[in-house]
Length: 77
Image (cartoon, rainbow, N blue to C red; front, side, top):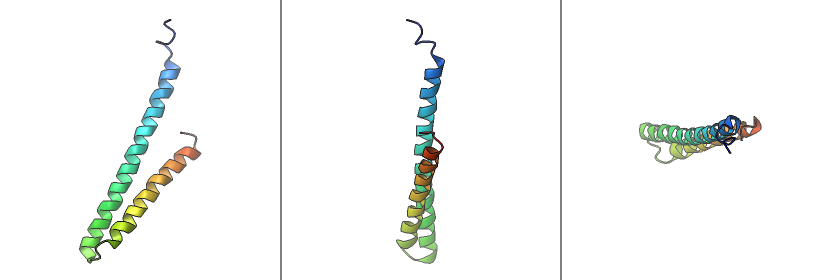
């Protein structure tokens, strides 16, 4: 009956998986935000309205998916 309360290995695995999922969300969000801010900043400085925003937003998406792929390759997912 009390074995589930003190099953620290199972709880540790659940906590690790939840932390990796939250880190993934942070990396995806941060990489998109950084790409968007850089693109908007360059567009304002150079006067090329949507081009750098799209380019750097694409780089942000690629960076987020690269982290997802690297985590999958290392067996973290």
